[in-house]
Amino acid sequence: MKPRLNLIKALHVLCIVCEISTAVGLAAVLLMAPFSAALVRDGRANFGLYAGHGSLNWNFRIRLPYGADSSIGNDGETGPSYGRVSFSPLRLHLEKGEGLIETRGSSDAAVAIDQIEGTMTLTRPELAAQAIAAARWPFVAGMLCTGGVGLAILELLRRMLRSAIRLEVFTAANIRNVRAIGFLLIASGVLKLAAGSWLVSRMTEFMMQHVAGGNRALEALYQGDVSMMTGLLIVALAEVFRQGLTLKEDSQLTI
Image 1 (tube, rainbow, N blue to C red):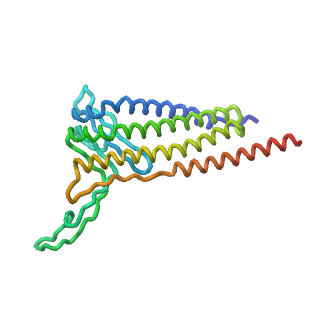
Image 2: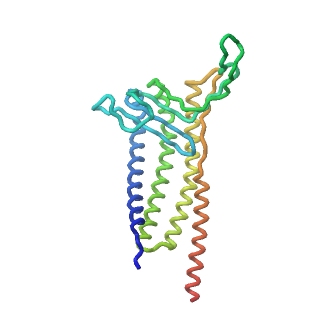
Image 3: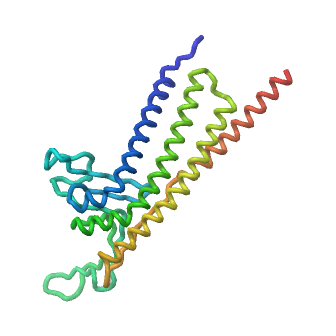
C-alpha cells in the first residue's frame, strides 16, 4: 500500500517558499543598511531595533516617492511622521529626587519611581540618523548570523523532506542532517548572544552620550533564548537515532 505523501509534499513546498523569502529578506536588509542613516536623516524612513527575548527584531517604514503618505512595512505608529528611530528594551534609572510625584499642597512625595522600562524613540531626524549609524553594524552582524543559520536549517529540512518523499526516512544521511540542525541551533544561540550584546552596548553608549545624564541613567536589556538548549536536545536525539540505526543494521547482518 502506497503511503499518502500529500502532507510531506506540502511541507516540502512550504520549506522552499520559506527559504526563498528568508533569502530575499536577508538580501533586503543588507542592501538597506548602507542607506539607513541617510533615509532617516532626510525624513523618509523610520526604523525600530529591538534586542530582546534572544533575537534581534526590527521594523522598517519608508515613504515611497510617488506619494507623501505611502509606505511599506509597519513601525506601529500612525500618521506620516518619518525620521525616527526606536530602541527597545531600555531601562531608565532615576536617582533620588528625580522621579518623585508630589501630592497637591504638600512637599512630601506620594510616589517614588525607581526605574522605568520601555521603548525610546528619537524623534529628531539628525539624532535618529546618528543612532542608526551607531547601531548599524551590530544589527547587520546579528541579521547575518540569524539569517544564515536560518537558511541552513531550512535547507537541511528540505533535504529531509525530499528523502521522505522517496520513502528514505530512517537513514544515516537524515540522522546527520538532524545532528547538523542541532549544532546550527547551538551556534545560532551563541552568535545571537554575541551580536545582541554588541548591539546593546552600542545602544547604551549612544543613549548615555546623547540622551541620559545627571540623575538619569539608561540601560539596554537583552535576554537569551532557548536555542542552545533546543540544539542540545536535538543533538541528543540524533545520537539516539544513530545508535538505533546501528543496532538495526547489526541485527539485519546477524539474521
